[in-house]
Image 1 (tube, rainbow, N blue to C red):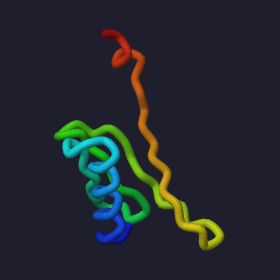
Image 2: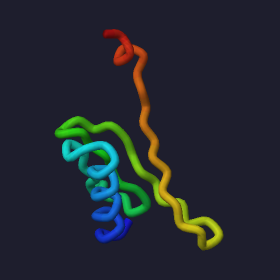
Image 3: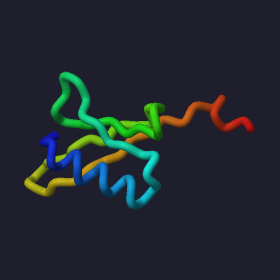
Length: 69
């Protein structure tokens, strides 16, 4: 992803979920970026550029052990 797209996604996540969230470039990957809450990795945003319609898909895995209080 281009740096300006990552900056826009970072602003969006901060606006929607709060200032603790950050979107960062991925090393050696240009089709996606990473989402963090403070220093904890929480997911990946993938760029979907099929048929000229650009969209972004956020993928977050939730482990069973994280669901326990």
